[in-house]
Length: 422
Ligand code: NAD
Image (tube, rainbow, N blue to C red; front, side):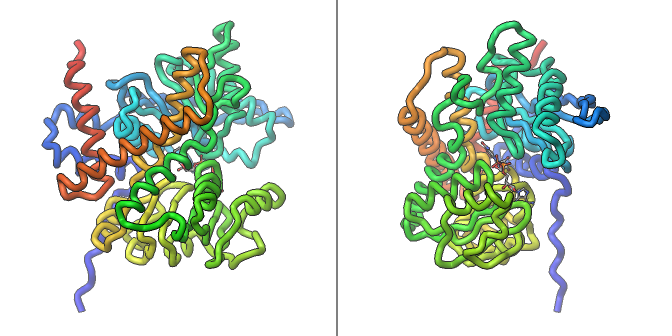
């Protein structure tokens, strides 16, 4: 028997992002100059900065802010706190933000930032000092008309409030539009907290209808139970779907008869994890990817669906709440086996869309109701989904490549229209 040739996967998330871009650039027949401009970030800042710990010791942390491309407007992208964060991760995440903003047609370029830190090892006061110092370090790049951060993994509205307060203290006046994902009482937007999940549900609803599937009959498995994952589970259960599995960094829980996400959130509040929730069977994060379900929602970190496990994915739809969960080789395997992948740059764009609404509201000091926010979000997501679907049908490609074709074309056109300075 001939041995199957192992599929070579790009080794870092940035190499994956570049491979995804190359596929689209080839299909678009992008000129070499434009290709080189878009293939790498425009600016990268690394900062090493000291933080005083509660016991008086000083520890130096490393952080990054990467700005991928600013042709279509100010930069936008979250801030991640994670012990294994690398500059390459941030480059990939910044590039994905450029395409995400272009798919949804928001007037932004893409950026991302983060600090190499495990926030679980720090006290709340230490996290506040780290955040304020990091905000100061990257203040040479960020600003309401320059680059606007937002929450990502392990950062939240309180951390955004500290960033906003720090920059406002430097300026001597309040600058609400410096970050999005802020608490409502200091200029946050209604609907921002669950916007990523709501956007994903809007895209999934459209996709299910294309496949003649009823949302209320779907069995859903969600990996990651934070802002994105827990809200997806809650919103989908409210729409009648059955949440058969959820997980977090410590492992997961499975119940083919359905789990109650609200009760699990409450449980997590007491024990710190969903993995020991008693009303189901304990499973690993690897098991969750291969579960018998209709919709798999990766909502944690990247690189979880690879050539190694893609053949065993049984879901009919993979809806990517996380950034970068599926490798290019896995994309092809899933496509060939008939799994519909709703790619990150489309499926999780609800967060940046409502961040855009928050930024607009902050600049105008004029605030919308939750109904207005949600209605505008549905409009943007529905339009983006159908635009991507149209390209997928026209070009005979899967949804990720279709989303890239749409996004890369828009950014390339903006670069061309603006011209090369000087
Ligand atoms: P979060 O910090 O609120 O939650 C992350 C969750 O993932 C936690 O439950 C954590 O325990 C779990 N997790 C961490 N490591 C894991 C692992 N190895 N295996 C399984 N679970 C693990 O973060 P979030 O804001 O919900 O972000 C989750 C994903 O969604 C990220 O990829 C992020 O980039 C993406 N995303 C978030 C937003 C947003 O608005 N928050 C928008 C777009 C995309």
